[in-house]
Amino acid sequence: EYEEVIFLRHAKTNLNDGSFLGIGRNPSIINKSKVKTKLKTLSKKRIKILHSSKLKRAYETANLISNRFYFSSDLIEKNYGKAEGLNYYELKNLFPSIIKKWNSKKDKKFPLGENDDDVLKRIKRFKKNFLIRLNKNKKKGISVIITHNALLRCLIGDDFKTPQYMWYKINIEHITPLNYIFRENKIIPNIDRNVIFKNMFN
Image (cartoon, rainbow, N blue to C red; front, side):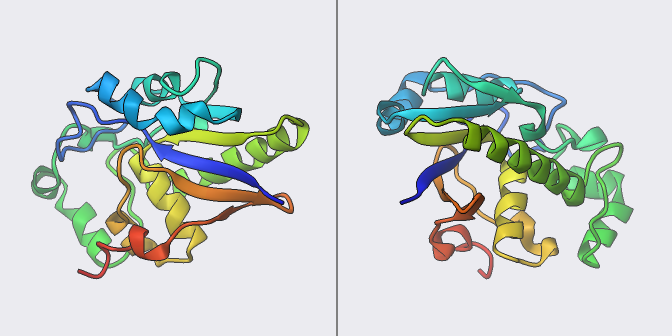
C-alpha cells in the first residue's frame, strides 16, 4: 500500500516563448478553461495536500485543482538573474563565458542568478519539509505539487542519477503529471524513463 504524489509543471503562459522565464517576470496562465478541463481528473480525486510555488503561474494552476493549498518559496522557478527575458542566443552573445563553462560540463550560475546545485538544494529542503507534513497528515488521498520547468528537471535528473550537464535536455511538459509514490518515508519516482528522456539522445 502506497500513497500517490504528483509533481506538475504549471500551465502555459504567454511568456513561455523560448526566453528564460524565471522569477523576474510573473505572468498569468492562458487558456484557463482548457486547462481546467485537462486537470478535471486530478481535481476530482481526493487531495490530501496541495503545494504550490509562490509564482502566479503556479498558484493559478493550483487554484484550478483546489482552493486549499500551501505556498512554498522553495518551489519557485530558477533565478535566471540578468538572463531573464533573453533567449539562449542572446545569452551567448552577452555572456559567452557562461556558455563555455556549460559546454565544458561545469554548473556555472546564471549572471546574478542560480545554477542547478542551488535549485537542487531547494528541492531537497522542500522534500524534507513535505515528508514531515505528509507523515503528520492522516487523511487519505493524493498529494500534488505545482512547480516549474528547471526545478522538475533537477528533481528528475537527480532521482534518475543522470549526469547534471544533461539535465537541461529533460523534457517536462506543462500540466503533465509526473507520478511519484510515498513509501517508507521516501518519495520515489514511478515514471516511465523513456517518456522523460525521449529528447535526450536525439
